[in-house]
Length: 574
Image 1 (tube, rainbow, N blue to C red):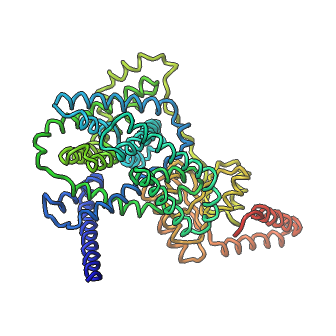
Image 2: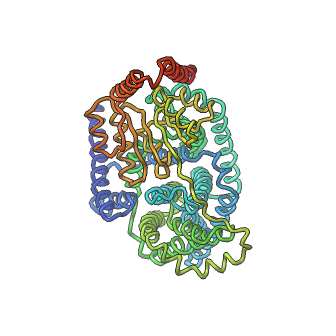
Image 3: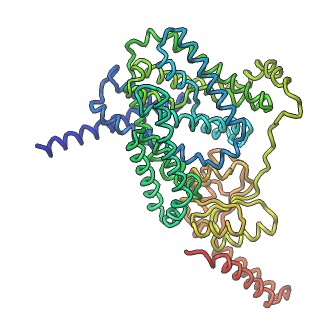
């Protein structure tokens, strides 16, 4: 009987997950067809599956439990991207500007909500919810437009970095209490500091050696990363925090390691799967009963998010001395509600701080504001022209010497994938030619040797999208791959061609049919080692026959190459 019940539970769970994934996929295709964010499609899929529409999901409690894991993976991924060393780079503007923006947005929303007669606790939660913007949406927008290295993107991402830190503190507070008091805030703060200190200690003392030992094996480094995530999530739950807080701290403890980019690429499919379930579950929880009474509040909060908040951010950037165009673009890129505000709302709902109608209002605000961001940025140039008088007035308040303008980025010369044998010879040639090179290699020992040689390098795999994003291929003249796996080279070529980067691509193939496939994919030149070596030897022999070179000179050149490779590989295992 027990086995039969267990079997039925398993079948029902499998059916529910299948329904969620199928619906999410269909709606995602429709959303992509109309060029809408996928998050909106996932939430809509949840609404269609939920109690207000088709009522197809039966085990909502289990789905919500899985969505908790989705939250954890989302924040683990954000933590991996948040190297605390970058806080030194984002500067005073990001720290002070974020505090000013969050406080003023909160106060404006709080005042409006009180005028609508909302209770102060609920008004506080909703005011916090609208104060934050979406990291994932903004990063995607700038990445898709090849603007990730512009001044406007650096301003926006600096603010988002600080916003995410504030969100995590708020999550840790809301998840441990059903009422916000000074004592509960202080208790949560000191508990959070203890876990945070543990994460920093592990990051600096234990993890560098532990991950170095696992880095040679893809499966081991993936399992070690997931183990870290689940251990910190368990510790956070033990202290009464959300498991998402622990997952985030696990992420930031791994972020400073050289392996973090590769780890991001490996866990991204897992993150996407569970995040899909999370966003669908948000739609499942939406209840439209009673929403009619909140329609005026919805429009007021939406106006605050897509008009007041962007203008406020642009004004703050102008007062910090940044140029008008960059300040405007940064401000209007942040005119949406964060997906992590959904997490705040979900935790507040589970703790009884807000009702289901406020939660549904939050989901609607997130979905609509994300959609409006896409349209706003398409006409951002017109918005800038319309507001140029206002921007000019704010800028005129500062002396011209204080204005900070966009710096032109210098194109990198070469990105070299693989630095063993052939790659080492290429690197030496590039250095002699005084070219700026970024080397990417999947062998951790080789990366350590390159670091000792003061070579700009990354640990990672050519078929990892996170590595390709971080390599800055859009700003590179030549990409050279000595990787022999044709599938990996095809992946890299397709990545570059799909984004229409103006980059010359040189790759290696073992066989003629592989070379032809690579040429068809868009490679500019394919090296076939045995053919190239045959051609080289033919040239050498011709020179010897004609007396242009002596064999002793050729031998010495060959020995120099061999000794260089031997010196380079002396401290490298494998």
